[in-house]
Length: 429
Image (cartoon, rainbow, N blue to C red):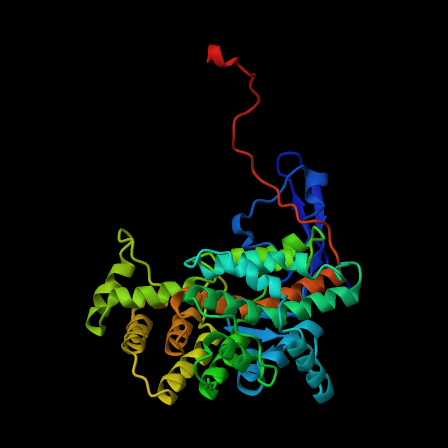
């Protein structure tokens, strides 16, 4: 039995239009509004697209009210506990978890493509020594189409898949190279005998003067963080990748645009802001004072790492990462005063009526910075870590869109400028 459409009526003209109901497998129903302009002469106005579905996707489901996050139907809790990052990458790209043969083939191909063209290292060396790593990442990734243009026919599914695999493979190599350039260290090449996260850590921290052994604790922590950050539905950077992709642009250009969007402090830079906030608070004894400042509308101080645009309940990733932060600090034998401060801040905030009423629960950014700090990742590289993980989501969303192309993205606007007026000669103004 088909569902009756919504009826929208213009009370001024009496004209009506039917709005078909579009229901996914889960989540809120939507109604299609594309007939409204032609039938009634109106467009819709939705700043930030908070109430607008821009696409249909089978990749990630979020229920912000219930605190649910699933990749291809699998709860994030199960994947975080039982899976690894490359298995999750295969899942997001292909729709199903791999069997053993598929997993082995996938990981072998990722390993094979982890090297970058040697001229890219020359390109990276051209950046100023103190350039921000995200600036370098955006530039280098955008340039990949100039190095790997032989198989870049976007109408060929095989070429699209190869480009996506290359992006996942090469992002850690590029990230490590940007870090090493900043440090003044020589280039480190990917050791193929290590797994994805081990290989990344080796490229980041190994030096020619001594043998470097990858910490299993660090590798497991990175694997978990990468799983948690792999995809998050139609966030700002993913929507950017899809919008650029709708033009037919190559995936390297699309991902470079996604990196630029992720760089914003309200998006990928949030965990960096959390760490800065904790350092500003300084001591556990200062927490009540800063909680009061956060509740004062006239005070510019904001509590970073609390609340989320989507989640109106506890961020399920925050629960997982909170436990991981404890485990990492314990296994590494570290005691971080910022961790103690974060726990006290969380405790007070979750008992405070203001935070409860506003549903300001800790999100994934609240703890991820503490883990990166414990593992020796500098603050300037925090968002780069996010970009490595989110590349999997970006290319998966890009592949899905490429397999089911839509019209080029073209948001409308409400024009609020001057009405028509006549040009006046410069000497008469």
